[in-house]
Image 1 (cartoon, rainbow, N blue to C red):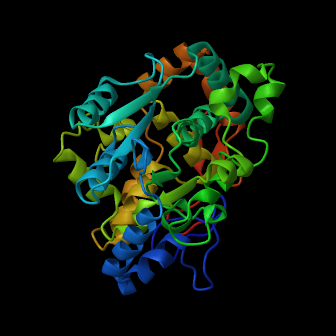
Image 2: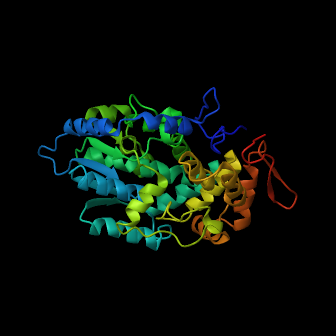
Length: 375
Protein backbone atom coordinates (compact mmCIF):
# COMPACT_ATOMS: atom_id res chain seq x y z
CA UNK A 1 0.00 0.00 0.00
CA UNK A 2 1.39 3.37 -1.08
CA UNK A 3 0.01 6.89 -0.80
CA UNK A 4 -0.12 9.71 -3.27
CA UNK A 5 2.80 12.07 -2.68
CA UNK A 6 0.41 15.01 -2.34
CA UNK A 7 -2.87 13.83 -0.81
CA UNK A 8 -3.91 10.77 1.22
CA UNK A 9 -5.20 8.70 -1.68
CA UNK A 10 -3.87 5.13 -1.42
CA UNK A 11 -3.12 2.98 -4.45
CA UNK A 12 -5.66 0.46 -3.14
CA UNK A 13 -8.53 2.41 -4.73
CA UNK A 14 -9.92 0.13 -7.45
CA UNK A 15 -8.82 0.94 -11.02
CA UNK A 16 -6.38 3.67 -9.99
CA UNK A 17 -2.83 4.11 -11.28
CA UNK A 18 -0.36 6.66 -9.92
CA UNK A 19 1.87 8.75 -12.19
CA UNK A 20 5.62 8.00 -12.29
CA UNK A 21 6.03 10.93 -9.87
CA UNK A 22 3.66 9.28 -7.40
CA UNK A 23 0.59 11.46 -7.91
CA UNK A 24 -2.88 9.90 -7.85
CA UNK A 25 -5.05 10.56 -10.94
CA UNK A 26 -7.18 13.11 -9.08
CA UNK A 27 -4.18 15.19 -7.96
CA UNK A 28 -2.65 14.95 -11.43
CA UNK A 29 -5.93 16.16 -12.95
CA UNK A 30 -6.31 18.98 -10.42
CA UNK A 31 -2.80 20.25 -11.19
CA UNK A 32 -3.67 20.43 -14.89
CA UNK A 33 -6.82 22.47 -14.17
CA UNK A 34 -4.67 25.55 -13.57
CA UNK A 35 -4.07 25.76 -17.30
CA UNK A 36 -7.70 25.33 -18.37
CA UNK A 37 -9.53 28.06 -20.27
CA UNK A 38 -12.92 27.80 -18.55
CA UNK A 39 -14.61 30.14 -20.99
CA UNK A 40 -13.53 27.83 -23.80
CA UNK A 41 -14.97 24.85 -21.94
CA UNK A 42 -18.25 26.71 -21.46
CA UNK A 43 -18.37 27.34 -25.20
CA UNK A 44 -17.70 23.66 -25.82
CA UNK A 45 -20.66 22.87 -23.59
CA UNK A 46 -22.87 25.31 -25.46
CA UNK A 47 -21.88 23.73 -28.77
CA UNK A 48 -22.50 20.28 -27.33
CA UNK A 49 -25.96 21.17 -26.09
CA UNK A 50 -26.81 22.63 -29.47
CA UNK A 51 -26.44 19.14 -30.95
CA UNK A 52 -29.43 18.04 -28.89
CA UNK A 53 -32.26 20.43 -29.81
CA UNK A 54 -35.50 19.84 -27.94
CA UNK A 55 -37.62 19.79 -31.07
CA UNK A 56 -40.96 18.19 -30.23
CA UNK A 57 -39.67 16.79 -26.93
CA UNK A 58 -40.88 18.21 -23.64
CA UNK A 59 -37.37 18.27 -22.13
CA UNK A 60 -33.84 19.12 -23.24
CA UNK A 61 -32.06 16.61 -21.03
CA UNK A 62 -32.44 14.29 -18.05
CA UNK A 63 -30.59 14.55 -14.73
CA UNK A 64 -30.50 11.90 -12.02
CA UNK A 65 -31.12 13.44 -8.61
CA UNK A 66 -31.17 12.43 -4.97
CA UNK A 67 -31.89 15.94 -3.74
CA UNK A 68 -28.33 16.18 -2.37
CA UNK A 69 -25.66 18.79 -2.90
CA UNK A 70 -24.45 17.68 -6.34
CA UNK A 71 -27.79 16.99 -7.97
CA UNK A 72 -29.35 20.17 -6.57
CA UNK A 73 -26.54 22.24 -7.99
CA UNK A 74 -26.72 20.48 -11.36
CA UNK A 75 -30.46 20.95 -11.71
CA UNK A 76 -30.38 24.65 -10.81
CA UNK A 77 -27.30 25.41 -12.92
CA UNK A 78 -28.65 23.67 -16.00
CA UNK A 79 -31.95 25.50 -15.77
CA UNK A 80 -30.87 28.92 -14.53
CA UNK A 81 -27.43 29.28 -16.16
CA UNK A 82 -27.86 27.26 -19.34
CA UNK A 83 -31.54 28.02 -19.86
CA UNK A 84 -32.39 24.37 -20.41
CA UNK A 85 -35.43 22.42 -19.28
CA UNK A 86 -34.30 19.21 -17.56
CA UNK A 87 -36.41 16.27 -16.48
CA UNK A 88 -35.23 15.15 -13.06
CA UNK A 89 -35.12 11.41 -12.35
CA UNK A 90 -35.08 10.14 -8.77
CA UNK A 91 -34.78 6.53 -7.62
CA UNK A 92 -36.79 6.29 -4.41
CA UNK A 93 -35.69 4.17 -1.45
CA UNK A 94 -38.12 2.11 0.64
CA UNK A 95 -39.56 3.94 3.67
CA UNK A 96 -37.26 2.03 6.06
CA UNK A 97 -34.19 3.43 4.29
CA UNK A 98 -34.98 6.95 3.19
CA UNK A 99 -34.40 9.72 5.74
CA UNK A 100 -36.76 12.64 6.49
CA UNK A 101 -34.04 15.02 5.32
CA UNK A 102 -33.86 13.10 2.04
CA UNK A 103 -37.59 13.51 1.55
CA UNK A 104 -37.33 17.20 2.42
CA UNK A 105 -34.53 17.74 -0.11
CA UNK A 106 -36.42 16.05 -2.92
CA UNK A 107 -39.47 18.14 -2.01
CA UNK A 108 -37.26 21.23 -2.09
CA UNK A 109 -36.23 20.47 -5.67
CA UNK A 110 -39.82 19.90 -6.75
CA UNK A 111 -40.84 23.16 -5.08
CA UNK A 112 -38.10 24.93 -7.07
CA UNK A 113 -40.31 24.27 -10.09
CA UNK A 114 -38.81 21.16 -11.68
CA UNK A 115 -40.58 18.25 -13.30
CA UNK A 116 -39.49 14.99 -11.67
CA UNK A 117 -40.07 11.30 -12.30
CA UNK A 118 -39.71 9.09 -9.23
CA UNK A 119 -39.12 5.37 -9.73
CA UNK A 120 -39.46 2.83 -6.93
CA UNK A 121 -38.29 -0.76 -7.45
CA UNK A 122 -40.35 -3.46 -5.72
CA UNK A 123 -39.46 -3.24 -2.00
CA UNK A 124 -39.46 -7.00 -1.41
CA UNK A 125 -36.92 -7.55 -4.18
CA UNK A 126 -34.92 -4.53 -2.99
CA UNK A 127 -34.67 -5.94 0.55
CA UNK A 128 -33.76 -9.45 -0.63
CA UNK A 129 -31.06 -8.16 -2.96
CA UNK A 130 -29.65 -5.93 -0.25
CA UNK A 131 -29.28 -8.95 2.04
CA UNK A 132 -27.76 -11.04 -0.76
CA UNK A 133 -25.35 -8.20 -1.62
CA UNK A 134 -24.14 -8.00 1.94
CA UNK A 135 -23.77 -11.75 2.48
CA UNK A 136 -22.07 -12.38 -0.88
CA UNK A 137 -19.89 -9.30 -1.21
CA UNK A 138 -19.99 -7.57 2.21
CA UNK A 139 -21.33 -4.65 0.19
CA UNK A 140 -25.07 -4.12 0.68
CA UNK A 141 -25.08 -1.33 -1.92
CA UNK A 142 -23.99 -3.51 -4.84
CA UNK A 143 -27.59 -4.02 -5.92
CA UNK A 144 -28.96 -0.60 -4.96
CA UNK A 145 -26.19 1.24 -6.82
CA UNK A 146 -26.94 -0.86 -9.88
CA UNK A 147 -30.58 0.24 -9.74
CA UNK A 148 -29.52 3.83 -9.08
CA UNK A 149 -27.18 4.03 -12.08
CA UNK A 150 -29.55 2.09 -14.34
CA UNK A 151 -32.66 4.16 -13.64
CA UNK A 152 -31.51 7.30 -15.44
CA UNK A 153 -30.63 5.81 -18.86
CA UNK A 154 -33.70 3.57 -18.62
CA UNK A 155 -35.92 6.62 -18.14
CA UNK A 156 -34.03 8.51 -20.85
CA UNK A 157 -34.92 5.73 -23.27
CA UNK A 158 -38.57 5.68 -22.24
CA UNK A 159 -38.96 9.46 -22.47
CA UNK A 160 -36.91 9.69 -25.69
CA UNK A 161 -34.38 12.09 -24.13
CA UNK A 162 -30.95 11.34 -25.63
CA UNK A 163 -28.89 13.71 -23.45
CA UNK A 164 -28.07 12.61 -19.89
CA UNK A 165 -26.24 15.12 -17.69
CA UNK A 166 -24.14 13.62 -14.89
CA UNK A 167 -21.98 15.20 -12.21
CA UNK A 168 -18.32 14.43 -11.70
CA UNK A 169 -16.12 12.34 -13.95
CA UNK A 170 -15.07 9.44 -11.67
CA UNK A 171 -12.03 8.76 -13.82
CA UNK A 172 -10.58 12.25 -13.50
CA UNK A 173 -11.96 13.44 -10.19
CA UNK A 174 -11.79 10.19 -8.19
CA UNK A 175 -9.31 8.04 -10.11
CA UNK A 176 -11.49 5.20 -11.47
CA UNK A 177 -9.63 5.16 -14.78
CA UNK A 178 -11.81 2.50 -16.42
CA UNK A 179 -14.63 5.04 -16.73
CA UNK A 180 -12.67 7.46 -18.93
CA UNK A 181 -14.31 8.17 -22.26
CA UNK A 182 -13.21 9.74 -25.55
CA UNK A 183 -13.17 13.21 -23.99
CA UNK A 184 -13.14 14.62 -20.48
CA UNK A 185 -16.90 15.04 -20.60
CA UNK A 186 -17.84 11.76 -22.34
CA UNK A 187 -19.63 9.59 -19.78
CA UNK A 188 -20.66 6.63 -21.90
CA UNK A 189 -17.89 4.51 -20.33
CA UNK A 190 -19.54 4.93 -16.94
CA UNK A 191 -20.68 1.32 -17.51
CA UNK A 192 -17.09 0.21 -16.80
CA UNK A 193 -17.07 1.40 -13.20
CA UNK A 194 -16.65 -1.29 -10.57
CA UNK A 195 -20.37 -1.43 -9.69
CA UNK A 196 -21.60 -1.87 -13.26
CA UNK A 197 -18.80 -3.80 -14.98
CA UNK A 198 -19.10 -7.30 -16.48
CA UNK A 199 -21.73 -9.71 -15.30
CA UNK A 200 -23.21 -7.21 -12.86
CA UNK A 201 -26.52 -9.10 -12.66
CA UNK A 202 -25.31 -12.71 -12.84
CA UNK A 203 -25.18 -13.14 -9.08
CA UNK A 204 -28.80 -11.98 -8.76
CA UNK A 205 -29.95 -14.73 -11.10
CA UNK A 206 -27.74 -17.21 -9.24
CA UNK A 207 -29.55 -16.18 -6.04
CA UNK A 208 -32.78 -17.44 -7.57
CA UNK A 209 -34.47 -14.18 -8.49
CA UNK A 210 -36.42 -14.32 -11.76
CA UNK A 211 -35.14 -12.10 -14.55
CA UNK A 212 -38.56 -10.42 -14.78
CA UNK A 213 -38.11 -8.99 -11.26
CA UNK A 214 -34.69 -7.51 -12.06
CA UNK A 215 -35.59 -5.02 -14.78
CA UNK A 216 -34.82 -1.97 -12.57
CA UNK A 217 -31.28 -3.35 -12.07
CA UNK A 218 -30.42 -3.75 -15.75
CA UNK A 219 -28.04 -1.13 -17.07
CA UNK A 220 -28.80 -0.55 -20.76
CA UNK A 221 -26.34 -2.23 -23.13
CA UNK A 222 -24.06 -0.40 -25.57
CA UNK A 223 -26.50 -1.49 -28.25
CA UNK A 224 -29.34 0.16 -26.31
CA UNK A 225 -27.30 3.36 -26.04
CA UNK A 226 -26.63 3.33 -29.78
CA UNK A 227 -30.23 2.57 -30.71
CA UNK A 228 -31.51 5.50 -28.62
CA UNK A 229 -28.45 7.69 -29.36
CA UNK A 230 -27.89 8.22 -25.64
CA UNK A 231 -25.00 10.38 -24.51
CA UNK A 232 -23.91 10.90 -20.90
CA UNK A 233 -22.10 14.21 -20.35
CA UNK A 234 -20.14 14.98 -17.17
CA UNK A 235 -21.04 18.52 -16.12
CA UNK A 236 -18.20 18.62 -13.59
CA UNK A 237 -15.71 18.80 -16.47
CA UNK A 238 -17.11 22.20 -17.46
CA UNK A 239 -17.24 23.75 -13.98
CA UNK A 240 -14.01 25.14 -12.59
CA UNK A 241 -15.48 25.38 -9.11
CA UNK A 242 -16.99 21.87 -9.02
CA UNK A 243 -16.16 20.42 -5.61
CA UNK A 244 -17.78 18.76 -2.64
CA UNK A 245 -17.72 21.92 -0.54
CA UNK A 246 -18.66 24.36 -3.31
CA UNK A 247 -21.60 22.25 -4.43
CA UNK A 248 -22.78 22.02 -0.83
CA UNK A 249 -22.58 25.78 -0.29
CA UNK A 250 -24.38 26.47 -3.56
CA UNK A 251 -27.15 24.02 -2.67
CA UNK A 252 -27.49 25.12 0.96
CA UNK A 253 -28.30 28.63 -0.21
CA UNK A 254 -31.09 27.04 -2.25
CA UNK A 255 -32.81 25.14 0.53
CA UNK A 256 -30.66 22.02 1.05
CA UNK A 257 -31.08 20.37 4.47
CA UNK A 258 -27.82 18.88 5.78
CA UNK A 259 -26.85 16.44 8.52
CA UNK A 260 -26.65 17.22 12.21
CA UNK A 261 -25.54 13.78 13.45
CA UNK A 262 -21.83 14.55 13.76
CA UNK A 263 -18.58 13.30 12.27
CA UNK A 264 -18.02 10.72 15.03
CA UNK A 265 -21.21 8.97 13.92
CA UNK A 266 -20.79 9.26 10.16
CA UNK A 267 -17.26 10.18 9.14
CA UNK A 268 -18.89 13.11 7.35
CA UNK A 269 -16.73 16.10 8.21
CA UNK A 270 -19.25 18.67 7.00
CA UNK A 271 -22.53 16.78 7.09
CA UNK A 272 -23.31 17.21 3.41
CA UNK A 273 -23.00 13.77 1.78
CA UNK A 274 -25.50 10.92 1.29
CA UNK A 275 -28.26 13.00 2.83
CA UNK A 276 -31.09 10.79 1.60
CA UNK A 277 -30.16 7.74 3.68
CA UNK A 278 -27.86 6.71 6.56
CA UNK A 279 -26.81 3.14 5.80
CA UNK A 280 -24.19 4.27 3.31
CA UNK A 281 -22.21 5.08 6.45
CA UNK A 282 -21.85 1.32 6.99
CA UNK A 283 -20.52 0.89 3.48
CA UNK A 284 -17.98 3.65 3.97
CA UNK A 285 -16.76 1.94 7.12
CA UNK A 286 -16.53 -1.42 5.33
CA UNK A 287 -14.76 0.25 2.40
CA UNK A 288 -12.15 1.37 4.88
CA UNK A 289 -11.64 -2.17 6.15
CA UNK A 290 -11.34 -3.49 2.59
CA UNK A 291 -9.21 -0.81 0.95
CA UNK A 292 -7.71 1.27 3.76
CA UNK A 293 -9.66 4.47 3.06
CA UNK A 294 -13.14 5.73 3.87
CA UNK A 295 -15.29 8.83 3.65
CA UNK A 296 -12.94 11.12 5.58
CA UNK A 297 -10.12 10.32 3.16
CA UNK A 298 -12.27 11.44 0.25
CA UNK A 299 -13.09 14.69 2.07
CA UNK A 300 -9.56 15.63 3.10
CA UNK A 301 -8.03 14.79 -0.28
CA UNK A 302 -10.09 17.53 -1.87
CA UNK A 303 -9.19 19.95 0.91
CA UNK A 304 -5.47 19.19 0.48
CA UNK A 305 -5.64 19.76 -3.30
CA UNK A 306 -7.34 23.10 -2.78
CA UNK A 307 -4.77 24.22 -0.23
CA UNK A 308 -7.28 24.50 2.61
CA UNK A 309 -5.83 21.70 4.76
CA UNK A 310 -2.33 20.47 5.52
CA UNK A 311 -1.46 16.83 5.00
CA UNK A 312 -0.62 16.56 8.71
CA UNK A 313 -4.06 17.83 9.77
CA UNK A 314 -5.72 15.56 7.21
CA UNK A 315 -3.77 12.57 8.52
CA UNK A 316 -5.02 13.20 12.06
CA UNK A 317 -8.64 13.38 10.87
CA UNK A 318 -8.32 10.17 8.85
CA UNK A 319 -6.77 8.34 11.79
CA UNK A 320 -9.59 9.43 14.08
CA UNK A 321 -12.70 9.18 11.90
CA UNK A 322 -12.18 7.15 8.71
CA UNK A 323 -13.99 4.10 10.13
CA UNK A 324 -16.70 6.10 11.92
CA UNK A 325 -20.17 4.54 11.98
CA UNK A 326 -22.78 4.91 14.72
CA UNK A 327 -23.99 1.59 16.21
CA UNK A 328 -27.58 2.71 15.68
CA UNK A 329 -27.12 2.74 11.92
CA UNK A 330 -25.75 -0.79 12.02
CA UNK A 331 -28.63 -1.98 14.19
CA UNK A 332 -31.32 -0.49 11.94
CA UNK A 333 -29.70 -1.95 8.83
CA UNK A 334 -29.48 -5.41 10.42
CA UNK A 335 -33.11 -5.22 11.46
CA UNK A 336 -34.10 -4.37 7.89
CA UNK A 337 -32.30 -7.30 6.25
CA UNK A 338 -33.06 -9.76 9.07
CA UNK A 339 -29.55 -10.25 10.43
CA UNK A 340 -28.19 -10.02 13.95
CA UNK A 341 -25.58 -7.38 14.76
CA UNK A 342 -23.17 -10.15 15.80
CA UNK A 343 -23.65 -11.84 12.41
CA UNK A 344 -23.01 -8.48 10.73
CA UNK A 345 -19.66 -8.11 12.46
CA UNK A 346 -18.74 -11.74 11.79
CA UNK A 347 -19.29 -11.06 8.09
CA UNK A 348 -17.25 -7.85 8.19
CA UNK A 349 -14.34 -9.44 10.05
CA UNK A 350 -14.20 -12.36 7.59
CA UNK A 351 -13.76 -9.85 4.78
CA UNK A 352 -11.27 -7.48 6.34
CA UNK A 353 -8.21 -6.95 4.13
CA UNK A 354 -5.61 -8.89 6.14
CA UNK A 355 -2.78 -7.18 4.27
CA UNK A 356 -3.89 -3.90 5.82
CA UNK A 357 -5.55 -4.92 9.12
CA UNK A 358 -5.30 -7.44 11.93
CA UNK A 359 -8.33 -8.80 13.77
CA UNK A 360 -7.59 -9.26 17.46
CA UNK A 361 -8.95 -12.11 19.57
CA UNK A 362 -11.61 -9.77 20.99
CA UNK A 363 -12.75 -8.85 17.48
CA UNK A 364 -11.11 -5.44 17.38
CA UNK A 365 -9.88 -4.47 13.91
CA UNK A 366 -6.45 -2.86 14.02
CA UNK A 367 -4.52 -0.99 11.33
CA UNK A 368 -1.20 -2.45 10.18
CA UNK A 369 -0.34 0.62 8.05
CA UNK A 370 0.48 4.18 8.96
CA UNK A 371 -1.85 6.76 7.45
CA UNK A 372 0.09 8.84 4.95
CA UNK A 373 2.98 6.38 4.87
CA UNK A 374 1.42 3.03 3.95
CA UNK A 375 3.14 -0.31 4.41
